[in-house]
Length: 111
Image 1 (cartoon, one colour):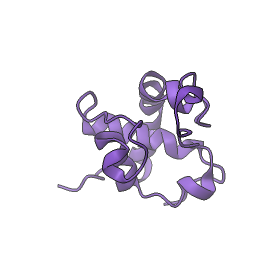
Image 2: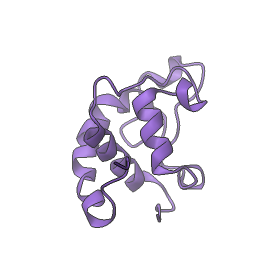
Image 3: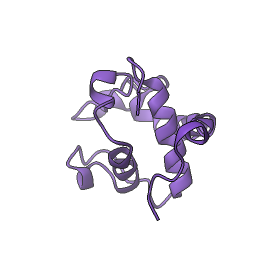
Image 4: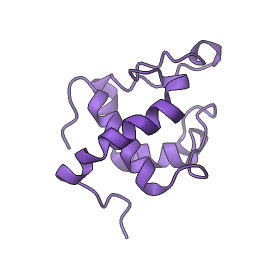
């Protein structure tokens, strides 16, 4: 089974649920609007990713985003301060978060 089973319009429909999950799990570091300016960001040695930066975010595959959220930054060659959420969130929830993250980038993400 492929990790990206929800594509197209069904993928976009999950962004609303992803926003709720993002607010609960991601916004402390990445900020409410995804700019990497959450409450905890200033205390981290590396700035959290700015999910609004389309020049960077649009270069990242959905598979990579799923992996970094599921397994943590260290497993994806990024900051070890990015925790792994795979033990707390299931695959659908992580896909929903990725769907929401895709709505934040400027310019917009085009698969």
